[in-house]
Image 1 (cartoon, rainbow, N blue to C red):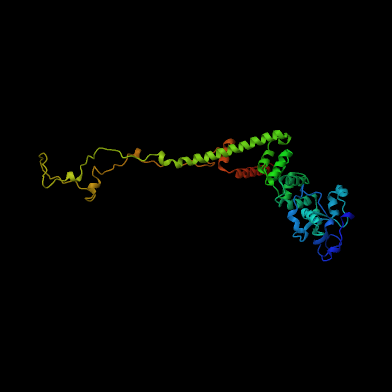
Image 2 (image 1 turned 90 degrees about the horizontal axis):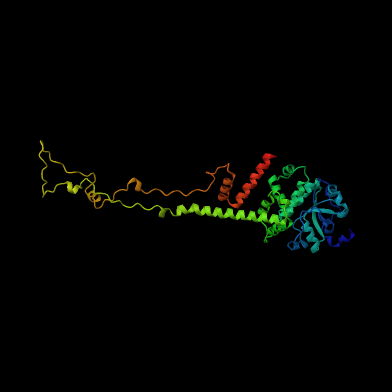
Length: 380
């Protein structure tokens, strides 16, 4: 421990504490300046690697965020088996949150850190592990496999996964998704980590679904890879089917004008009723009288309900007869609507096909998560 101590001469301008602890006046944790060499890394840190620390190089001159730590006594009450490896002295603290800041301070030569020492964080193994997990989950470079390991380690502190979910505010399906990642072969887990870093790799959603395959944990890498290829092919087929369904739904609406021809005029015999012009006798040419009748009554000319201009309108040459009922234009058939209205809800395959045609991939995954959550809650 003596090799890790630093000189206090350069820290005269800052308040230095004699020992970590709490404010005795109100029993509340307070921030204290503690030598960097006395801030020990958390042996239970969920991060496998701290990564590139260059983004924290400015910590040499200024610390923008304090660290959270517990005393060695509080930590060793939970994990007494770490006593020898920890090697903590009475002035040391174990950093729970801020291990990257601690490492950067050590790397870039900062001699002390602002630390909040709060032993209530070490109330149980679960509370200390959760405190370390929460900070790391907010970081973009905290990969899904590290998160899954940390979550399952917290769950292991409870008698059942259900009790862990209730205590930590997680759903059982959320825990199952993390557990599924750990069922994969280490090579596939490496691909998940690579994808999380923005490199070529395996999508976390696909990896979780692969991990849910029955018996996947006992399969070899080759067998898991074969299952993965089948899963990806099924996804590609579903996308192609959905695209084809959309094109098919749009096709009738686009071809309506050409599919239903416009009605053509039908030539019909001239009307039996003579036009008004023929019915009315001319003054210059009197009409021959009809056959003799007992009482001859002059026949009145046919009168039109329309004004005189209507004569041309209804003449045989200008008339356009109305089409017969079977010749009238019929409205275009409505394009089929995508949805679940006509689906047999008891036919699982038909329902799955309809859902894949109707929802996007992300929406279908969220629906699957929600269904799994309901089933776990109902059956528990």
